Image (cartoon, rainbow, N blue to C red; front, side, top):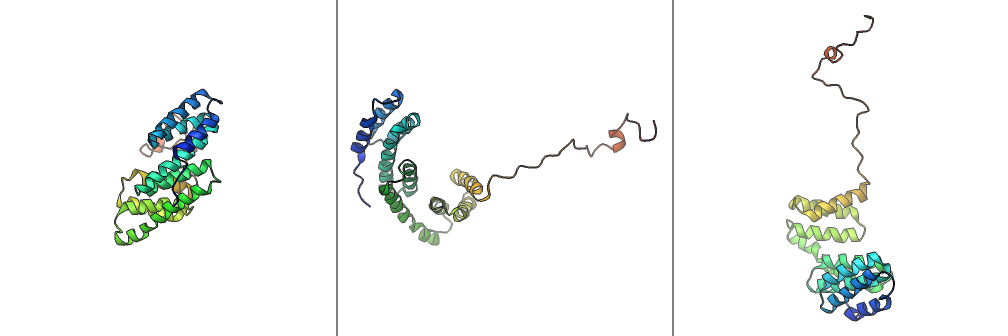
Length: 206
């Protein structure tokens, strides 16, 4: 994989182009993000750039650059799932950036080893959890759901898998059908019909 060169310089240049334009709060947040980038505090930088982009879309490229930087760090730490998530978010901003696709593909290639890991340790929930994300990113929701359900079988309290299963269920089956409701009052089965109608004359006995 190519070394990411845009780094702090890329973020700073992109920010300089729009500082002083538009929303002042967004500009302040961008300055905060630049300072965090200089310190390589990518979590803080991304938080600041994301808030700036929400206020003014002119600042969105800074967020994409910072996400790529953090993805590179994640890859170096072998946190491939997190790297893929950051690249995917960056692509929502820069969908025509081939370099981001390459970086995500590289992380996904490392994750292909999870097939072998599952063969060797089929009772390890985290392997299915990560492979489910790979399938989801590729649009293979059926396979993603199968791995997510296997994750929950092995680790029922896994919050990420629970959330992913809800998402995939909707993707595959649409919104759940509402529970049908009765059209009128339901008769109490514990009250005999005569008692239930006490005070009301029986037909023909006016």
